[in-house]
Length: 149
Image (cartoon, rainbow, N blue to C red):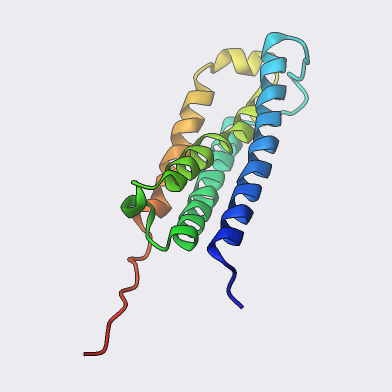
């Protein structure tokens, strides 16, 4: 049984709103840590290779989910549906929100490690974005529907 477009739209919004709430909470904790209200530095000793690996895996997985969700909702690939607001909102939410987990893991590193490599959050976002774009560029072409003549 196929669901109606309105039902799939409400499920789409509820999933993305739930993820938005989780990722905004993670950003809030990271900001509170940065302002000194919630000191978390030193609670996790995570080296740079693992952090970049997490960013790469997260980018690839979220990019794949983005392509799948966009094709299922609009019926066309993300680049071809840029005129639709849903695709743009999904792109922004899937590109920015999940990186909060990587940034949060970085704030858990010891303070000395954070001071020794201050550009790591920027580099990890670049790694995440690069791997997020891989599924977008390697997606399957849309299936054509042939009419009988």
